Image (cartoon, rainbow, N blue to C red; front, side, top):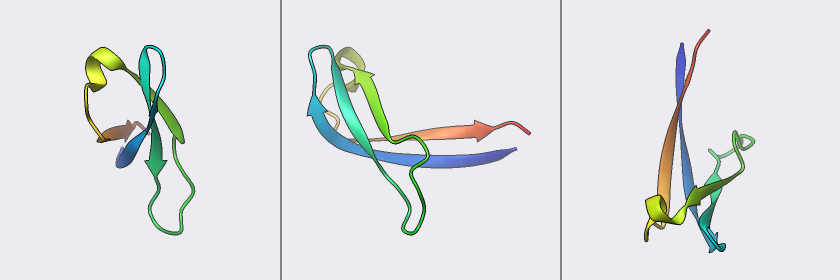
Length: 56
């Protein structure tokens, strides 16, 4: 089992959600890319992080 923390920064608002773009580690490709989070949850957050647990 391995864990990966992925960081995102605010990109723009859409009608019902907020779009975030991934900040990949230097020299690596993005894991997720673009992430849409519903406005009721995202609020005014300019950055978020997601932890992925990969089950082997």
